Image 1 (cartoon, one colour):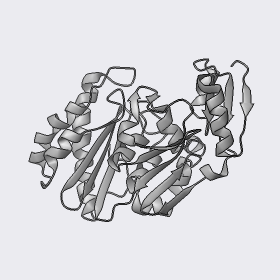
Image 2 (cartoon, rainbow, N blue to C red):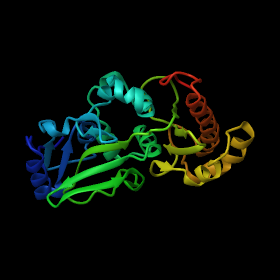
Image 3 (spheres, rainbow, N blue to C red):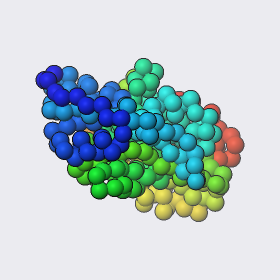
Image 4 (cartoon, rainbow, N blue to C red):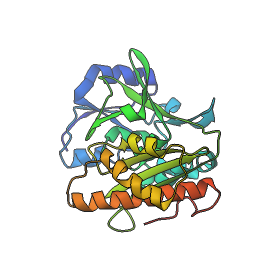
Length: 293
């Protein structure tokens, strides 16, 4: 790891000024579970590291004005421990439980996870089906970005020079709903997803579907959502829906799985997740957090 300058601002204004000044030669530090590894391996070599952990206004987790506000310093463990998240945003709670290990979840943040923008980001499908909004601050002011527009490529986002993500806003759902996030991995424990699928079923036969680890970016499957809209979920309908859902993805082969396996299992996990979401909407089905593969 090469030498670098280290700053720990205490205000967001100070942080945005530093980030605007140093630009591409700097990196932001939150939990550090991704950045520190990349720096240790020599993959990333910033001249400046700006540590955001001293900024109190980024330490936020509250339901206010119809939105769950998840500040940039909020860890996955804090999401798991929140009764509000578990009750009103259970798919985010469920996805958080499947991320890495307890030690990682104690440090890793939801904001850091999406800003890393890896295709297998477990938190992304849950945020996509819940229509989350990313809030970014810069010297020019604040900007709100729909999560569906946030990812543009592996480890690439739409964030502009000098923009710092301060929070994620997730709208509350007033109607009855059920959700599910299923992570298919090679083994139980700390592993990246081979396939990740989140689904949401809302009262009135409205559905949302999102994938991770099977495309260059986490992706919303809007075409199959339109196909399912207004219909009762049955095995026959899901068999028709699978090929439509799979149009949204383009898996590759790597050390974790072949593209053929990922494509096949994406259809299987999509159907299982959708049936689970409907059962949970009806007050039945497995408990949130149960492993379904």
